[in-house]
Image 1 (tube, helix red, strand yellow):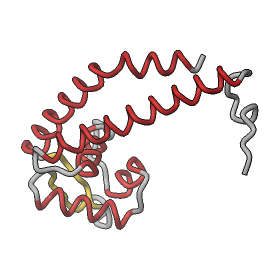
Image 2 (spheres, helix red, strand yellow):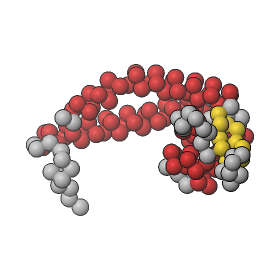
Image 3 (spheres, one colour):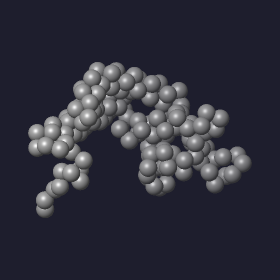
Image 4 (cartoon, helix red, strand yellow):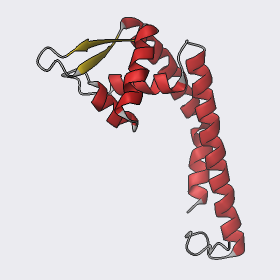
Length: 146
C-alpha cells in the first residue's frame, strides 16, 4: 500500500514530511508516556486508570445532581453494563457510593465518597504536575506541525 503524503496534509517537501512524521511520533510517545504516568499514579493509590477516569467523570458531572450510570457511560464513551461494573468496583474500593434515585427507582445515582474525592484530588494533582512538566515538549511538537 502506498501512502500519498499530500492526502495526509504533511509538508510539501520530503524534508517537511519527515519533520511532520517526527512531530507526530513525539506527540504519540508523549501521550503514551503520560498515560503510563497516570496509570502508575492511580495504581499507587489503589485505583486503576479506568477507575480514575470514572472518578473524574463523577466529579465533572452537573454540580446540581449526581450522575446516573447512563450519564457516566456516555461521558466515558463506554456501554452501560461496563459503566455499571466500573461503579461496582469503585464502590467496593470505597471511592463511590451508589443509590437508587428517589424519583425514578430505575436510575442508579453515583457520588464520590470522601475517600474517592481525596484519591481523585491526589492523582489529579500529580497528573497536572506531570502535564506542566511535559507541556513544553508537546507545544514544541505541535508547533513543528506548522
